Structure formats: C-alpha cells, structure tokens
Image 1 (tube, rainbow, N blue to C red):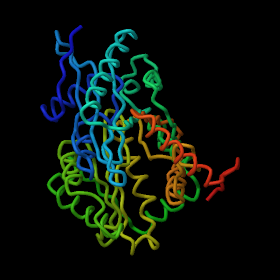
Image 2: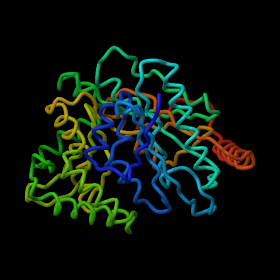
Image 3: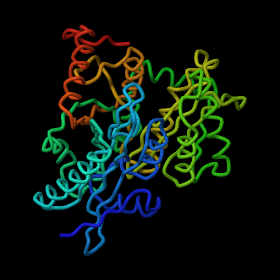
Image 4: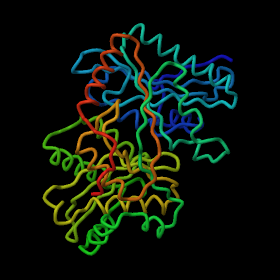
Length: 377
C-alpha cells in the first residue's frame, strides 16, 4: 500500500473535517476548529498536522494532529500545541497488521521531524468519546486506547465526567446532586433566562455575543489570557455549526454568565466559561447555565455531554491545584459518569526524561496525600 500525505495547512475546513468524519476513532481533538483554536496559543511555532490517504483510492486512513512549540520557561522545542497536547493519531483499518504499519509510518514521520526540529518530547491525548462509539458499528469503543505503549510512551489516566443523554430528563435530574439542583431551581425562580447562540439560533448576533463573552472572560481573569486568534477560531466554529454559546440573562436582560460548547459527532463538551463576578453570589448562574446546555443537547439528539475533568488529588504525572479540585467537585454534582482520558508523553532524550521524572516525583511527594476518602462539599 502506498500513502499520500496531506498537511493541515494545505487543505480546507470542509475537506479536512470530511476526512476526519470518515476515520473511525476520531474525537474532537482531530477536528479543524479545535486544531485551529489551539494553534493560536502562545509558543506554538509550527502546525505539522497531517492526514494519510490511501495512495490508490485517496480514502483517508489516519489523521495525526502535530505541532512544534517552544516552552517559555525552558526555551526547548517540544511536540505540542503550547500547553495543549496533540490528539493521539487515529487510524482506520480493520486489519490489526495494517494498523501497526500505518502507525509505524506515522511515527517515522514524527521521528523525521524530530531530527530537524530537535524536539525533546512529545505529548498526545486519547479521548473516550470518539467516533467508534458514535457509529455503533460493533467495535469496542476503548479498543486501541493504550496502543501507544508500542512506542515507549508513558501514560497517565484522568477521569472526565460525561452525561449520558440517552437517559430521560427525569433520570438525568435524579442523578444531579441535591445542592446542585437546588441552585438550578433557584435560578429559574429568580427569572434567569438562558439564550442559545449558534448557526440555527440568534445567528445574526454571533459576533456581538462572542465579543461580550470575550470581555467578560478578560474581566473575570483580571487580564487578557489568550490571543485574539483563539477567539476568532471560536467565532468560526459558531458560524460553521460546530459550536454553541449559551448566555444567562437576568430578568431585566443583563448577561451574567457564558458557556461556549464544542460539538463533534454525537457529543458536545464544555469548552470555555466565564461569569460576571458582581452577579455570582446573588444568582449562582453557572448551575442553571450548564444544566440548560445539557438539556439542549439532549433535545437535539446528542448522545453525550462532557462536563470535564474530575481531579481528586495528586498523581505522579500531575498535581492539581485546590481550585481545579473545587471546580471538578462542582462538575461532579451534575451526576455524570467517570470515563478515562489517556494522556501520553514520550521523550527523545534520556536527560530530559530523567529531569521530568525527578520533577514529577518531587511535586508528588511534596503533596503528602495518603489514602483517604474525599470530603463531600
């Protein structure tokens, strides 16, 4: 079999996403708009993402998000999209032997880039909500989730909270924590309204709505946290029908909370969120906001909604902050199931690997967390 390589920058959104949709096993990590978004973060030097086509039929066989970034604190190049990992290569072939050949070919390309770019490490991420599950074609959704062990990469597993939208609204509501549901009901009693902005709803107001979100995001953070290009990519996603923006308004039409969600296949995910601080205590708008988004996607026939990571405490690979744990407790109260996300890292230099492992071990031991039961908050 011969292969044809097509680079991300040499194609269009329609063509790229058309190929991605044909490759079983792809997640939103592989989509045009997600790659466009993370490509605009600081320190991303070059987007090397590519698709592999069958040289004889031009059918898509695999997709590999890939970029070179310069770590600011160390000044050394790595394969990553700034602080974001690359989506793990997705390969579509029924024969395991062909799959291994294509993956080996992908890694030969990566190693070739490493020779010229001198990257010291590479990071990948695998998502459990991928098109293998969406297609419902009898394949195991978690098949090949750990296949990158083949290339001496090291894995870390994190939990992500996922709402199963096959459940009835009554079942979903029953699973929500009492504290959470109390705030949802209070939001409704206080007259909060949630407006949806996407290709089908309020389409002429997308730019203004996203601009309001951007201003609220900067105000909440106390500064501009990311480049304008990331917001432009989010706007393109809204126009293309690949995302939705939900905004909570008070009864007198004051916008006080924003949630931007990405969409791929039969799943949606919380992408970015911000509250207007002066209204948080009085209204607690985030509770109703995300619950409304969940019900919206259920009404549209989506199968899953990803609320986000649930951190419990320090792991060898990552020590979450108290704020990250607090946010993940909030997310857990929606009653989603825990699914594993697999994150991979590989080192091209032994010295870099030793330095990273020592740093991880020092952070992990410094946390000093014995076996314990997490507190209910």
